[in-house]
Length: 503
Ligand code: MZP
Image (tube, rainbow, N blue to C red; front, side, top):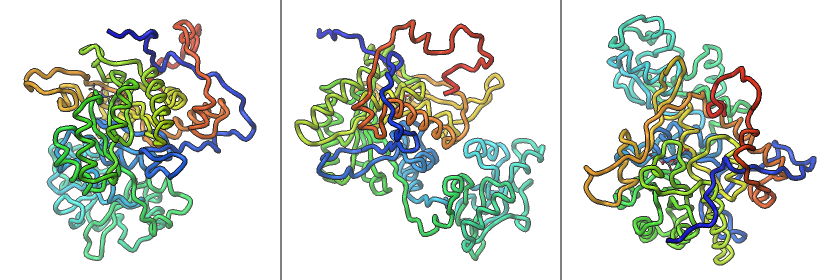
């Protein structure tokens, strides 16, 4: 056997030592733009880049179309989970691509037969305080009424009560028509303290829902959004089994980039999947691969033609792969080695293959560490699962709101295709757990704080861009006693909330 001389380390075992901060180096000037896919650095523009180095995990508890729109609005990208039918994954991708900032075709319509229980569940999921009721329960149906939060809170009806028994009649509806400008819609939304506003056409059919969150991001000049044909970026997870059917459907639906989702990517299956994509689409379809944790794994996938490569085995918050199979590597060590391999590959070929540090981000500063160690961007599951926009249920546990979060290798997800190497299905075993994470509110609010922390750290190191940060960063390992010193110590905390749920 081969023995590594050094133990493999996690992010928690490192700190950045600050460098000189010039007066010009302030968070407002930091540019977090980063490449997503391979390109000839120095000779051409990267065909797809991100404005922030954060992507959401290919997980059913994390990345659906709602998450994708919310994250793309902030400059990142989601990878829609692949452990669902080809049709429903493609439909999610298509909905993201159909989304026009400021207007979204509703997929949360109610019909008169919807029960109060279903309304409450949808409200929890979407966070909307109003929901339109159409005759057929679908976007484009005839708008019959609207359900407001107040209505169902006051209804005091049993949970199997039908929407038709408590909805606001059509006559009193606050609606807009297709001709209403975004500015006018904005005013109505604010005047009536609504979260969303239904827009109907001349025949009274529901066309769109306008969400307040959109105005928050485009307050300056909301009208601009109406000439705006910008489409959001969206990624989609695929596997190394049904790619011949799944890839065409996702490409047809408009996916900007695909990613082979597997716990272990240094395999012929991934090579065959990439080869199939190249054979059928050349370089037009972008495809990431992984996960790997060392130089050899990186080289294998880079040579196979992967557009980006994900790094990380066993570091995910819900992952028990290291315990069940004894496979994995500390996330920091894996990121450092793969980043070196990427740079070496670039020196040799002129081709830059971005790498993504996937899993194990617990504190916001772990993102800064990953970038300093050479990651081009990071993939997060737990982080995004906590927000309103994640698809999982918000539940009350011991008086605190939580969101459900489960691993793709858990019995709940049963995404065995992500793990197995063939053999009897009945012998599958779990590599992930089902859990709760503290509910943290909206993605927009949380990500703003996270990004500010990253930018502040970069300024402490005298860097205004990610490549500059990587060049200037000075990293030190920390002893276990200095980790204790790094947190609040020798004081009695007034706020007993665990640290991890506060970041
Ligand atoms: P985290 O951000 O929650 O720490 O980790 C998310 C990452 O864990 C995912 O992007 C994926 O690579 C990995 N994952 C997802 N499910 C499992 C599992 O069930 C897992 N073991 O390890």
